Length: 335
Image 1 (cartoon, rainbow, N blue to C red):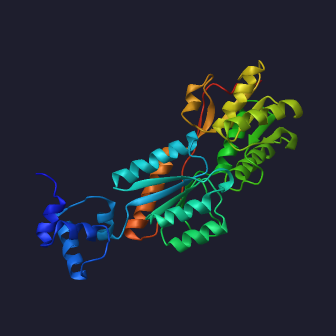
Image 2: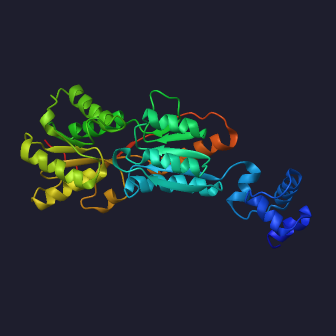
């Protein structure tokens, strides 16, 4: 059977095709009684021309907005894959916004999403400033946080325990005989992932009787190029070290590139462990030992939570997902 057409809707509602079109596009020129007849015919026939008609029936646009600080990163790509999987299965479209470094365009895109009348928002990898929260509150749409959380506002989130994961990464190096352990991380003011991962690193050192040396820590922005700059700074200025904990896989891979250029062997001369378990970490040589974040699964879970809020208006809980240490070939035991 062929799907119903706009002519079928007009015939069932006993109006013209032009009237049906005007109703579906929310234009003027018809009575409320006519509008209800058209919407009833649309619903009974299952006519779905586009999101406009569906939105008139269920009061939704069937779209969700997703805000990323860097849509080009592998991290964002893996998260988005999970978000879109669930959204598409449930009949939702996804609008992706690149808020840029330090959220320079976050307020602009929140306004765009408001104008687009999205049904909900997935907010990722950025600190939820008060101005963001107030803008989201005015939009009156559900929000789910991913890879971030708010300690001030009750907003459901999906993330790993960054402090515990960093602790495990550092302790793994210690268990392999390393005591001179350096770290490259995000900025020291990053409250989302930077500070918790540094705290986990420090705590692992302290619990194993190793003194923290600030000179062995260099900062960047989680990106590959910043990983190169950070390792160059450590090699030039830090006391000697036999192992490196990188707070992201991209930083780890950037550091490995510099090591290769300088003839520093991985893991013979320096052991390296990353964080994220991006697909590229399995492709490089040697393959990167790292902390696995189930990014695609986190995206799916966030999408499921958001759609549950959109469709049921019910409360959903936050989730700390499990991380896992993945052993590959960049850590070598020391006597």
